[in-house]
Length: 358
Image (cartoon, rainbow, N blue to C red; front, side, top):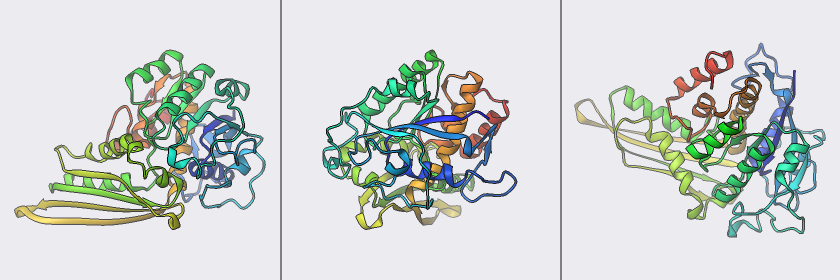
């Protein structure tokens, strides 16, 4: 089976979980139920078919290193669940800062080394990358568009895991369609995270005839993602993405507040979420649901991205260009078309089988 050649923009905790996971599940059995995987084999591709070929970052302690080493460099705090990771022969290249590093994150991200940034498109071509996965920090408006343009220039597919609207933007979608390249996004859902749990609870209220009067979702964590999001101006699209993912389930307007709430350094890569839903049931009587979810944050996204990568490769193999509607609806909070999760899952299975184009 052909390799899936993957480049990464942003060698943070999510990249660490993904890279470790590809090695961790390399021998996963297709006949067993494997903890943490939705698909051992996705179409023609097993997880071990994923090969990392390059990465881009601004952290002076990561630049120049092999990706297998760089994912464990500070300030990364993702759990190390692979004891010994072999060298990947995938170099981390110096990337331009642009707006990927907020003013309060220059020191935590160890940004500002002497290395001159590379020509990203040239590196993507040189390494024969099939796709570029965007793991930049939240709020990277210019940087995300820079990497999307580099992917277009290099003839690479693009996977946008952050809440900058590329796949769901008509103009950008048209660019990838015209270039004959697939794109998936935007803002990856966790495997079992705050958004998917909140959506499921909201759907339960709606299906059971309970009116939702108000709801909120508060999230705290201790990794650099949460530290970065202490600056409210970097959160605009994140709040939109998370809020729309939940409110799209409810067929009427509901007072809603969703988003990161605080940075608690000693939590490390642990994320804690509090969900509140207040409603009215039979006889106009009140009902409240309060839920608490606690997860290791970064591996939660990797369990989804591992499927997105293989879906994008299938699209490349089949000559499909533009937004992947099925995979984006299933795996991302702000897809081009928002549908309920069971529908999106069915679409993905139909896509794998070739019954659905995209």
